[in-house]
Image (tube, rainbow, N blue to C red; front, side, top):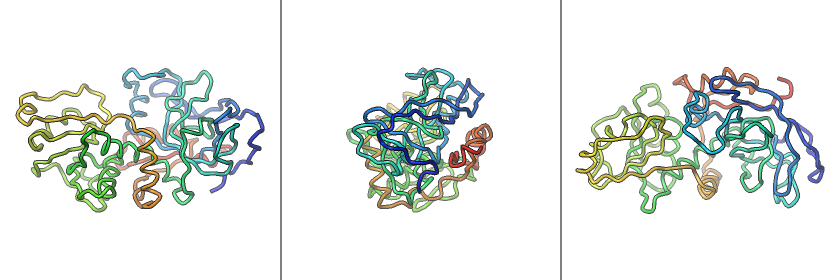
Length: 329
């Protein structure tokens, strides 16, 4: 897939203009022009084709519920799930114009905060942050961030073990289940309370929460309030619960049950570059890992319509914004 805009010389020091989704304040957004700097040493200018909407961090930003976070201020450009084509590179870059890349965000919008800055028609970011991707992935490459998040949750602990139970059958839970199998583990069980979301299990079983277990390792991808107390009875003694959701309410549990189980807890934080590299390699060999996860797609000009659907429609696993016609929208 090639950029619809002309490729500029890699040494031409011109600034560009982008159209960005801007959260002006909680619950209010616009899609408007923003000036961009020219890429400096080690930086690239990328024409974005598609951006994903995160139902975790972006939902909190949209509602104004995000806990104190470095760089958090409105107005801001959200998003860390973009894929596009390099238009221009700064001095010292190894990548070339015309290459398709995954971009996990940017901070290039002047007085407008980039948190996380990926939802724009074009952007400038450090080359070291982006990853080349196969053109055959196309819009599905926006899922690399969630894939890296799932990989980090599965592998980041000093004595990490692959879970045999995953809670939540959204995109993160589905990716975690698929990665468990891709990493050589037994197919996990996935629990999902929403009956409509139990569809689409591939290579594993998804059901309503039941009486199975006990389990040595349970991964929660739901972020549900009170989830630890629900899971502790299903945990083996000295078993581990991995918290991989994004929890708005304080996380708490009944101590006595955890005490009797000698339960261990691990919080899976932000993915690291090695996680992104690992999933890029896995998905290069098994591109089907990203199949059937993107359910909704709208032009970027309809972002005001897209965000409520992404956050509130249970049939929407993943919404992406299409920037390929941004100049004419």
